[in-house]
Image (tube, rainbow over all chains, first blue to last red; front, top):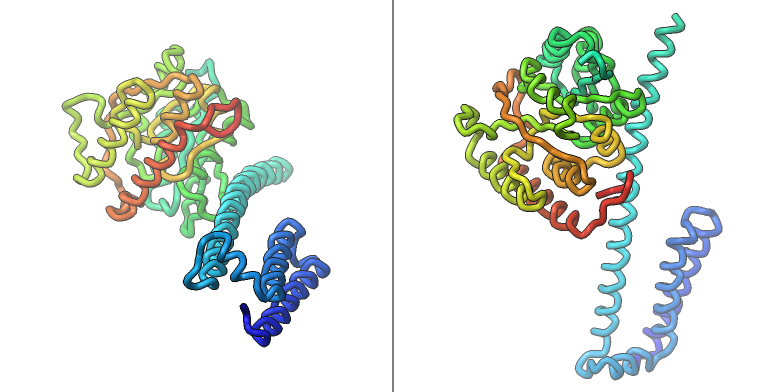
Length: 120
Length: 240
């Protein structure tokens, strides 16, 4: 079972995270699409912090008997990997769009220059 | 060739030493052939000298790499209704004097895309460094299997295309070492490809942008792209 003090501190930290995420959404610095992901993270952390027997229970489900916090690390690592993978797809998409925009811009600029020359 | 509107697409990055000569040579070869130089984020006078030599210059706002630059040229050709495009490198290694070999099969309708190969004839004098030759050879084998047709030079950017080829490449063109993937793309989209032997010159100025280590990296990347590409369906106007 998680010691009481640790549980309280972790709960406060989780609430703080949720608050920060909420503020970022409110001030439109975080799109809802990504916000959902972070809200979910905050909620999972909150549940694990407040539910003192939670970690042991979950470790029991998946068969980890020696060191229950290992479950936490495993879930955390997996989650981070997924977030990074998601970011890679976002970056790929952005760079593709960036190429298209650069080409569009160059072609339009050329056209504009031609117009200018014809006019003068 | 006067019966079709043709354009020469020349991608160039920091080629101020060669670009003027390349453009004038193309203009001298056939004054009917328009020339568009795609300046891929040069920091020197490439754009200026290309324009002075009589080319239309499209300047990319930053460096996109060879694939993105060449595709810009195809987009230009498509938007301006050209029915024939030839592609030459901006460093002068492609001799405009060899263009008829590429253009004639396209005009005859023998193929949608004609590629000038340095290796198609056995007695070719062209011998690149070992690493590069190995890379080219491996790609040639793989691509030949994929397209069920003998291909000897998958890295040649010396090409001629009809309007179908222009449309395909304007819509979708690979990024690094684009010619390898592009060859496979062409066949997947049911366009026809033909290789003809050509002679190429040594680079006049500057060095090849591909160093040994980077070419290994590119090889792996292109192999991956080819592999994944096989599991992708050809879509009209989409990615292949």
